[in-house]
Image (cartoon, rainbow, N blue to C red; front, side, top):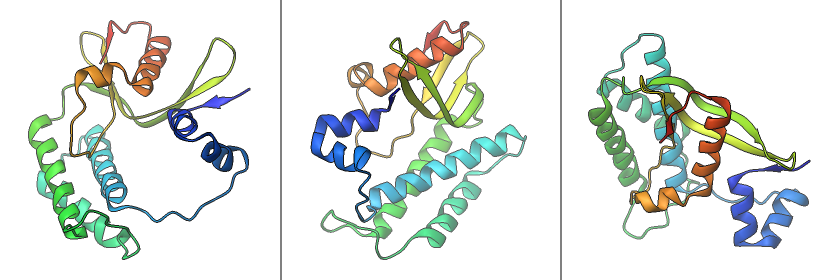
Length: 189
Protein backbone atom coordinates (compact mmCIF):
# COMPACT_ATOMS: atom_id res chain seq x y z
CA UNK A 1 0.00 0.00 0.00
CA UNK A 2 1.42 3.40 -1.00
CA UNK A 3 1.36 6.60 1.03
CA UNK A 4 1.09 9.64 -1.20
CA UNK A 5 1.58 13.29 -0.37
CA UNK A 6 1.63 16.48 -2.35
CA UNK A 7 5.38 16.87 -1.83
CA UNK A 8 6.08 13.32 -3.06
CA UNK A 9 3.95 13.76 -6.18
CA UNK A 10 5.43 17.21 -6.89
CA UNK A 11 8.95 15.83 -6.51
CA UNK A 12 8.17 13.06 -9.00
CA UNK A 13 6.59 15.50 -11.47
CA UNK A 14 9.63 17.77 -11.18
CA UNK A 15 12.21 14.99 -11.54
CA UNK A 16 11.58 11.22 -11.33
CA UNK A 17 15.26 10.63 -10.59
CA UNK A 18 15.17 13.03 -7.64
CA UNK A 19 12.09 11.14 -6.38
CA UNK A 20 13.96 7.83 -6.67
CA UNK A 21 16.99 9.14 -4.80
CA UNK A 22 14.96 10.71 -2.01
CA UNK A 23 11.97 8.41 -1.47
CA UNK A 24 13.15 5.01 -2.72
CA UNK A 25 16.92 4.97 -2.21
CA UNK A 26 16.56 7.22 0.89
CA UNK A 27 19.70 9.16 0.04
CA UNK A 28 20.03 12.17 2.31
CA UNK A 29 21.50 15.26 0.73
CA UNK A 30 22.82 18.02 2.94
CA UNK A 31 20.94 20.99 1.52
CA UNK A 32 21.43 24.29 3.32
CA UNK A 33 18.32 25.86 4.80
CA UNK A 34 17.15 28.97 2.98
CA UNK A 35 16.17 32.17 4.74
CA UNK A 36 12.69 31.98 3.17
CA UNK A 37 12.07 28.51 4.64
CA UNK A 38 13.54 29.52 8.00
CA UNK A 39 11.42 32.68 8.25
CA UNK A 40 8.27 30.85 7.12
CA UNK A 41 8.82 28.15 9.73
CA UNK A 42 9.08 30.72 12.52
CA UNK A 43 5.95 32.55 11.33
CA UNK A 44 4.13 29.17 11.44
CA UNK A 45 5.37 28.54 14.99
CA UNK A 46 4.25 31.98 16.12
CA UNK A 47 0.75 31.55 14.65
CA UNK A 48 0.50 28.08 16.18
CA UNK A 49 1.35 29.61 19.59
CA UNK A 50 -1.26 32.33 19.07
CA UNK A 51 -4.05 29.81 18.47
CA UNK A 52 -2.91 27.35 21.15
CA UNK A 53 -2.91 30.14 23.72
CA UNK A 54 -6.35 31.28 22.49
CA UNK A 55 -7.65 27.75 23.00
CA UNK A 56 -6.75 28.08 26.69
CA UNK A 57 -8.32 31.55 26.92
CA UNK A 58 -4.93 33.27 27.01
CA UNK A 59 -4.85 36.43 24.96
CA UNK A 60 -1.63 37.18 23.13
CA UNK A 61 -0.97 40.79 22.23
CA UNK A 62 0.59 41.70 18.91
CA UNK A 63 3.75 42.79 20.74
CA UNK A 64 3.95 39.43 22.55
CA UNK A 65 3.50 37.55 19.28
CA UNK A 66 6.28 39.49 17.58
CA UNK A 67 8.48 39.12 20.67
CA UNK A 68 7.94 35.35 20.53
CA UNK A 69 8.95 35.36 16.84
CA UNK A 70 12.07 37.41 17.61
CA UNK A 71 13.07 35.12 20.49
CA UNK A 72 12.75 32.10 18.18
CA UNK A 73 14.81 33.92 15.56
CA UNK A 74 17.57 34.71 18.05
CA UNK A 75 17.59 31.12 19.34
CA UNK A 76 17.41 29.27 16.00
CA UNK A 77 19.14 31.51 13.45
CA UNK A 78 22.62 30.55 12.26
CA UNK A 79 25.01 31.94 9.68
CA UNK A 80 24.60 28.69 7.69
CA UNK A 81 21.13 29.77 6.56
CA UNK A 82 21.33 30.74 2.91
CA UNK A 83 20.26 34.21 1.72
CA UNK A 84 20.24 34.08 -2.08
CA UNK A 85 18.54 37.28 -3.21
CA UNK A 86 21.08 39.98 -3.98
CA UNK A 87 20.94 43.05 -1.78
CA UNK A 88 18.93 41.36 0.98
CA UNK A 89 20.09 40.21 4.40
CA UNK A 90 18.68 38.04 7.16
CA UNK A 91 17.62 41.27 8.87
CA UNK A 92 15.34 42.07 5.89
CA UNK A 93 13.64 38.68 6.24
CA UNK A 94 13.27 39.09 10.00
CA UNK A 95 11.48 42.40 9.43
CA UNK A 96 9.32 40.75 6.76
CA UNK A 97 8.32 37.99 9.21
CA UNK A 98 7.40 40.63 11.77
CA UNK A 99 5.29 42.42 9.14
CA UNK A 100 3.49 39.19 8.16
CA UNK A 101 2.61 38.57 11.81
CA UNK A 102 1.56 42.18 12.42
CA UNK A 103 -0.67 42.24 9.32
CA UNK A 104 -2.20 38.86 10.20
CA UNK A 105 -2.86 39.99 13.76
CA UNK A 106 -4.53 43.22 12.64
CA UNK A 107 -6.69 41.43 10.07
CA UNK A 108 -7.98 38.54 12.22
CA UNK A 109 -8.07 39.90 15.79
CA UNK A 110 -9.96 38.79 17.96
CA UNK A 111 -9.38 35.44 16.17
CA UNK A 112 -12.97 34.26 16.47
CA UNK A 113 -13.74 33.86 12.76
CA UNK A 114 -14.04 30.13 13.30
CA UNK A 115 -13.95 27.36 15.88
CA UNK A 116 -10.53 25.74 15.69
CA UNK A 117 -10.60 21.96 15.31
CA UNK A 118 -6.88 21.47 14.94
CA UNK A 119 -3.48 23.04 14.44
CA UNK A 120 -0.75 21.30 12.47
CA UNK A 121 -3.15 18.39 12.00
CA UNK A 122 -1.89 15.08 10.63
CA UNK A 123 -4.11 12.37 9.21
CA UNK A 124 -4.61 10.46 6.01
CA UNK A 125 -7.31 9.93 3.45
CA UNK A 126 -7.93 6.42 2.18
CA UNK A 127 -8.12 6.46 -1.61
CA UNK A 128 -10.51 4.22 -3.58
CA UNK A 129 -7.65 1.82 -4.43
CA UNK A 130 -6.70 1.40 -0.75
CA UNK A 131 -3.65 3.65 -0.91
CA UNK A 132 -3.44 6.63 1.40
CA UNK A 133 -2.95 10.39 0.97
CA UNK A 134 -1.12 12.25 3.73
CA UNK A 135 -3.05 15.23 5.09
CA UNK A 136 -1.31 17.94 7.12
CA UNK A 137 -3.04 21.27 7.67
CA UNK A 138 -1.73 24.36 9.42
CA UNK A 139 -5.18 25.13 10.82
CA UNK A 140 -8.60 23.49 10.48
CA UNK A 141 -11.79 25.13 11.67
CA UNK A 142 -15.48 25.66 11.04
CA UNK A 143 -18.07 28.38 11.57
CA UNK A 144 -21.69 28.43 12.77
CA UNK A 145 -22.89 27.73 9.20
CA UNK A 146 -20.90 24.46 8.98
CA UNK A 147 -18.45 26.00 6.58
CA UNK A 148 -15.09 24.32 7.14
CA UNK A 149 -11.82 26.18 6.63
CA UNK A 150 -8.53 24.60 5.60
CA UNK A 151 -5.85 27.18 6.40
CA UNK A 152 -2.45 26.86 4.82
CA UNK A 153 -0.17 29.71 5.91
CA UNK A 154 2.07 31.10 3.20
CA UNK A 155 4.85 33.62 3.55
CA UNK A 156 5.38 34.09 -0.18
CA UNK A 157 5.67 37.57 -1.60
CA UNK A 158 2.73 36.88 -3.94
CA UNK A 159 -0.73 35.78 -2.86
CA UNK A 160 -2.28 32.90 -4.79
CA UNK A 161 -5.13 33.87 -7.07
CA UNK A 162 -8.47 32.12 -6.42
CA UNK A 163 -8.16 30.34 -9.79
CA UNK A 164 -4.77 28.95 -8.71
CA UNK A 165 -6.19 27.82 -5.36
CA UNK A 166 -9.09 26.13 -7.18
CA UNK A 167 -6.57 24.14 -9.27
CA UNK A 168 -4.31 23.25 -6.32
CA UNK A 169 -4.10 19.46 -5.88
CA UNK A 170 -3.13 19.67 -2.20
CA UNK A 171 -6.08 21.89 -1.30
CA UNK A 172 -8.44 19.68 -3.31
CA UNK A 173 -7.30 16.57 -1.42
CA UNK A 174 -7.72 18.39 1.88
CA UNK A 175 -11.25 19.37 0.86
CA UNK A 176 -12.07 15.72 0.08
CA UNK A 177 -10.64 14.70 3.48
CA UNK A 178 -12.78 17.30 5.28
CA UNK A 179 -15.94 16.15 3.50
CA UNK A 180 -15.09 12.53 4.35
CA UNK A 181 -14.48 13.26 8.05
CA UNK A 182 -17.17 15.90 8.65
CA UNK A 183 -20.45 14.90 7.03
CA UNK A 184 -22.08 18.15 8.22
CA UNK A 185 -19.73 20.26 6.05
CA UNK A 186 -21.86 22.45 3.79
CA UNK A 187 -18.81 24.04 2.17
CA UNK A 188 -15.03 23.78 2.41
CA UNK A 189 -13.00 26.96 1.98
